[in-house]
Length: 155
Image (spheres, one colour):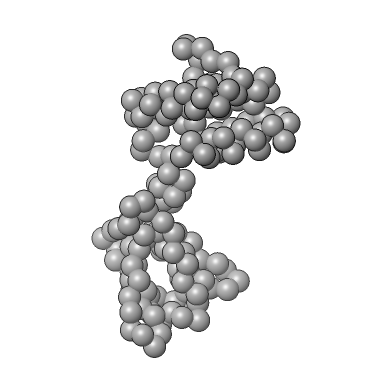
């Protein structure tokens, strides 16, 4: 497969053979940089799944497995690590309880209601399900950044 054809193969499982070493790198084709030709693969064999960048100049060949394919939205969700578990109410409750416990432990003012999934922090920011860094919203950038740091430390 030519790198130029790669945009038609996004989501397919590929085997990239590297120049010189003859090594293969496998994963789902996440994207190809149109300017440089660098390839990004989603490696689902590791826990947690991660992205791997392969420089264009290091690629000898790319072989596509047309039997294995993931949708782009599925790959995005896997990389953001907010998919699948976010649909699990037990996981969301555990995550919410852990955040509340963390805020209480560090004496950070917050407000929450059992009937409302949103946790209001420092009177300005709100943390919405799934209670991760990207689910922190605040008009004040300083407070927003501080709350994001707290959520990040939660793990």
